[in-house]
Image 1 (cartoon, one colour):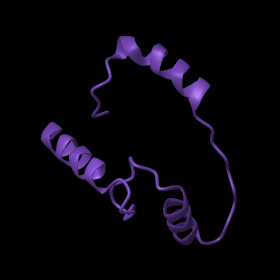
Image 2 (cartoon, rainbow, N blue to C red):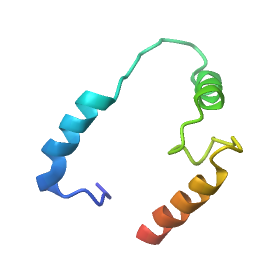
Image 3 (cartoon, rainbow, N blue to C red):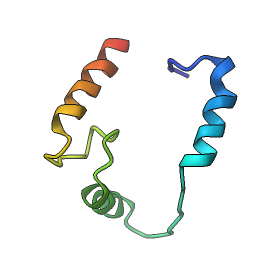
Image 4 (tube, rainbow, N blue to C red):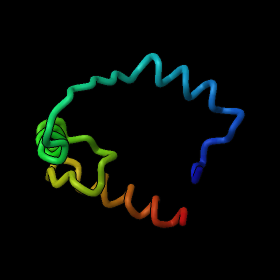
Length: 71
């Protein structure tokens, strides 16, 4: 796993995820179309490859640079 998260911090991260994240499951036959619709509608800032929303462009550019510097 390529991550900056230390093993010792995983319980803290898991707790934060349990308190702050929600996951839904919707079976469908066209995953790519559904994914694109959701990205366009919800504008997730951590999705760099498909999110083209102008609102958080500078954030995504900075995040992309940070991610590329880790490699």
